[in-house]
Every structure is written in C-alpha cells, then in structure tokens.
Length: 76
Length: 382
Image (cartoon, rainbow over all chains, first blue to last red; front, side, top):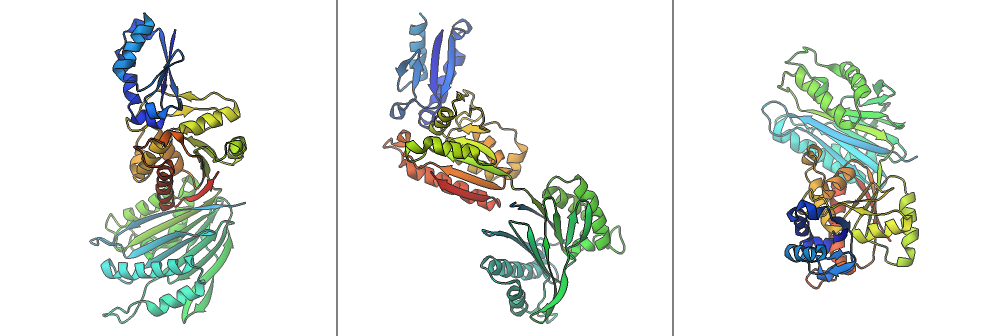
C-alpha cells in the first residue's frame, strides 16, 4: 500500500495542490486501489509547494505530471 | 444574565411612491440597542426627508449619550417647516434596550408600541409627560427572555382603509394578529413578514400609507468562537486552546497550523478532507469537539464575500469552507475572535505581502462586515 499525503494548506493551494487531485482520477482503477490518499494541513515547507509525501518521502514543487511519474515508479 | 435583542424591519411604500415616508434607524452601542422609528408628514420625498432627519438626529444623539428629553426637544426645535401646511412634523418612537433587558420607550404621536410576553399582547407600559412643549409617552420596562416588542407606523393600524376593512385593522386587530403570530414565529423576520403581508392583503396590494413594522425579540445571545492563528508565544498554546474550548458557544478553527495545534492539545486526530466544493476555497477538516475546521485567510476572505450576499447565502446549499463558516457566523449574535499573533512562516514567501498584513486585512474586513450585520464582535489577540 502506498500512502500519499497531499498538503492542503494555503500556500500549496495557491501553488496548485488542487491539480494534484486530478492525478487520482487519471489513475487506472487497479492502481488506485493500491494507494491511500490523505490530506495534510502543512508540511512546513511552504516555499517549495505544492508538497507531497509518498510513503514518507518528500516531493517538493509537485506537478500532476511529476506526481504521476513518481507514483508509477513507486508502484512498480 | 446578558440578553440579546434581535431586530428586524419590514416596510411597504404608499402606492405610487418610490420612497418610503417612514424611516427606521437601528444602532448598537457598547451597552445597548437603540431603535428609532419616524413617520414623516405626507408621503414620498418630503416625508422621507423629514423622517430620515428625525431618526438620524435622534440615533446619533442617543449613541453619543444624550438624554431622551434632549433628543425630543432638539427634534421639536430643528425640523424644517412644511411650506404648505406651515408645520414641522414627524412622529417619533425611540426604543432603547440594554444587555440586561431594561427597556426605555418614548413615543410621540405614533401608534402604541406592542409588548408580547408568554402569548399575551399589551401596550408597552408608558405615561404621558411634557418635553420641550410636546406631550410624549415615556415608559420603562424590564424585558425577559422571549419577550417581543413590536413598533409600527400608522400605516399598519390603518391597513385595510380603501381596501378590505372600512375602519382599518386598528390597534386591537393588530394585537390579536400579533398574538397569533408570536405563537408560530421563531425569529423576528417571521413576525415582520407575517404582519406586513397581512397589511398588504388588507390594502389589496395597494397600500394607502407608508407601512412599517419593526420587530424586536429578546433572547439569550448565540455565541461563536473563531480561532485564527497560533498564539504569539508557543508556551501559551495549551492555555489558550483550553480557554477557547471552555468559552461558551460554537467553536470554529481557521487555519491549518492552528488546527494542528488544537488537535495536538486535545489529543484527537485531525482529518483533512480532499474534497473541493469550490476551486477557490481549500477543503475543510474534521476534529472532534470543534464545530468547523477550515483553512485560514483564503477561506475567511471568501466568507466575507458570502456574508455580503446574505439572501444568496441562505438559499445556497454550497458546502465549501467559506459558505459553511459564513452560515455559522450569520446565525449568531456575539462573535469572539481569538486572533493568534504568531508570525506564520508559511507566508514568508517574498512574493507575498507580510503575513501580519494579510491576517489584519482579512480580520478587518470580517469585523466590518459582521458589524454591518448587527453582530457584536470581540477580537482578542492571543
């Protein structure tokens, strides 16, 4: 199981955290089942948002494309 | 026990007039509510000017601490004289209620103000006295929780003349109607709507006079506590959160860092939703014991916009954080804002203005809007 935490704080929201949720919809159903998405208030890394943590590994300046790639690598 | 006086106003203009010749001013001072109603001589622009002058003079003087006698005397001496009728004239009703329910009423030439307690309707107790050469009615009364006071202009008493009732509704007719209405009403807007639609019906949709209803209900204040931002000194975090939780009323926490802090102090998990109901408002979160948890400045900024369009807010079923917090704020009387003075590292991005400015601006806008809606706002810096 992959735990993906997405920051929902003010700065990450302004930097496009909402777009990262679109990655959810873009995933095939069998992959979606292997991932647990969680919201987080702040990672204290506001200057480098949007921030995501994947199984504890920090991903700064996340874009939907970057997140999708990292998820694919982790799922393999 | 402190009490809150809720006020609502409803008016009809005389047929063919665009301006109402009755005017109402509601002022809240630090210790009381002041309602001034005036019916200007005639109708239309002239009546409106007379009535507005009367209410503005009276409410400004009273808000600055003038006595009721001084107010009546000043108005009697300063109103402009009508060129045709050679008289200066408008009616005057002043109702002042303090936070303990002590009510003072002064009436000059207006229909008797109604008082309703436990289903019984009676005239507000008052005696005649002479002030500045005018005979006025003045009285004091100690109001209790769930008492109603209803002020009306003569358009209500005369409702039906030229329509369904040849002699008009009359004071007794109005009192009987009010007794029925208070039994079913939950708030002052119910009474205003019901009495006004009754008058409009008797006038057959063509009011023969300007018609005004002001309903006041005395009840326990509804309170809400809004915490935004962590305390300036982190060693006070736990103390402040405990005081916040112990305060009477609903609890709203605004801001991710603040919510995390509250969650840590109370030892309950914070669950952040990933659901966007509005692309401009970040999702809300859930925390046991807190009525609502939202993101900070963006949500509150959007909430101020929602509060500027109350009818739309009442109709909408939107579930974004800003609408949820605006709906809670709309329905309460006293709002205690616990403003944290800590500098938010999240906003230290050089592209953003300083954090304190953002927070202060949002806080200022929120306070102004809430006060415009008649709410009592207390800001405590923690």
